[in-house]
Image 1: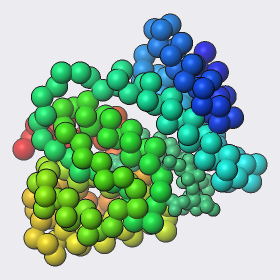
Image 2: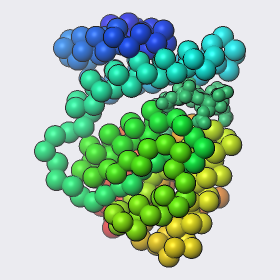
Image 3: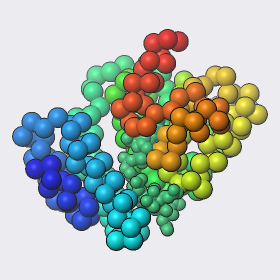
Image 4: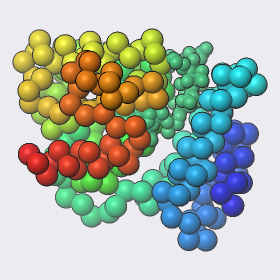
Length: 210
Ligand code: B12
């Protein structure tokens, strides 16, 4: 069953991916297992094929659509219901970068910890992050970058927050496939997480020690 989801995402067959997720949930598979073993694994395989030039951007795009449709079904099961907001998080993919699957997952998992998530979407400039922080006064600012060429957007945003006098008021979280703990430290971020569930755990820990 998990293999059907995995194959459907790679093939970009959204209806079949959706059906697979529904069936796996009905059969009692834990949502985290469906997510990690079938869905994220499929996107990793698509990335590998792209790198090996076995597939190209259109295939990557339809695979991403199938993933997003499947996630819509999984979402209510990942996000615990009836949680009172414990604070806000502003989240976005940095300027020039259109990848949003990982960011969306991080958003869902943060919601699961009780944070209210304000998603700025993709291609978010440092100025847009600053404006959102001014307007919403969040506890966390999360930035996602999937391209080595857009990673500098993280540093630029942290600098813009400093210039606006807002840096000390927020906990900056960063992530995305090319982002590392070392990079996070170099650019002066507060938190790095390699995946969505550890992002939620680290945010929770930061809230508890505050
Ligand atoms: C799907 C995909 C696309 C889709 C994106 C659709 C969408 N709506 O997101 C499309 C087709 C649009 C696309 C386009 C491109 N892509 Co692309 N894409 C991918 C692919 C296959 C999967 C990404 C993904 O969704 N992974 C699944 C999610 C769940 O994982 P994730 O994003 O890493 O997120 C997790 C963690 O990183 C972390 N995380 C993520 N964000 C955050 C944020 C915070 C705050 C925290 C704490 C944690 C965190 O938690 C997440 C969940 O666990 C990757 C391959 C890969 N291995 O990453 C290439 C990849 C990222 N793409 C790549 C490239 C080159 C491109 C293009 C330049 C291709 C082109 N020639 O046009 C364009 C660029 C477009 C742009 N300006 O952004 C390269 C990047 C190479 C590099 N080193 O820079 C990759 C690595 C493929 C490859 N192996 O070469 N892509």
